[in-house]
Length: 459
Ligand code: PLP
Image (cartoon, rainbow, N blue to C red; front, side, top):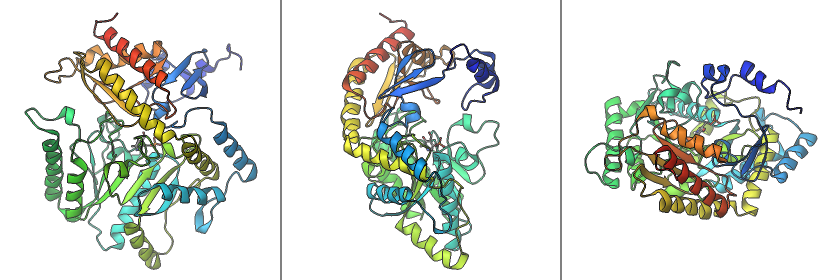
């Protein structure tokens, strides 16, 4: 396409971008980038820039860009059968094969898979399945859902309510009444005073229990959580957290939904976050890594316990009144099958574990003692650098200084895409699983330069 076409102008004039300052974008005061290609861990844009994508799109292009095996599978499926629905017992070879592959990779007690399109709609499906489940059980009061501050579960009406980030509520009249938020497992942001990680985990569990008691356990249906907090700051759970939380849920007959949209299929260096941390979820939400974003597809993995009740309800209620036209779309399913095969064949989860550990270790060695770095944390191919004005008090830098945005801008000028996480001053990395050690070195070295530059200790 000719470079002197009006595409940039059209983009400013007519394209309503998600998660963008609409007015500043329209005025031309925030940058635009029209992306044209990708290969491995890099993308290219219309201006000829080649950038190392340290966030794999939105932590979704797990196998890296330009995988011909997946492109071919999509093309073959489109030629053979571009669409058929999944209603009233229909399916396609791709969607049934993918269901089997997903269950083979899920924890043992999971028994069925429903396919949607994206993470938000899969969480929406799970909410509806839970309400349906409790209605079938004759517990119509048991409908409230507890999620966590800093959790991210999408931006629909109910899923945006589950999301525990104020930006996603403000002026949208959210959260909706059925949703409550409890403490985030964010040890770095713990209340003042001495507290070990285990004590902090116990405190989170006791806050959850107090909320359940306050509301009445007979009104609480489910607890919604990512195994590792993603968008809320890339926060692995503190020691003992999941054990203590699950004990509370069990005590009060509350379902656990593991939102594995980010952690599913290898991001933590193991197949599923639930197995990684010993979670026994009743439902699992999957999306991103299912197809590495080569086509939109998500899923709800249903445990045997929940399934048995749904099955029993069907005899009384008839067909499940839920579904999308594009549920289990064969092109998405073909992408999923090819993606999961490729992950196995190339040993990409092992690479995510090894190079992810290397990235985190190198980041700690290089920046761990920096006076303005409060914490470096991560798991698998996830890494966060939290900035501070004062390490001893963990005080946040002055918001007006926009240190994270400036550091991320500096990285971009030097060819690295990082993410300024939306809550607190956190530089986030979630590279593709195919990242090499040299690329990890480049990320670390340029992050150190960016942090030094922003805090005035630049070289
Ligand atoms: N759940 C988690 C944990 C996510 O990180 C996201 C998106 O980032 C979602 C759900 C929502 O997925 P989508 O944006 O595909 O609707």
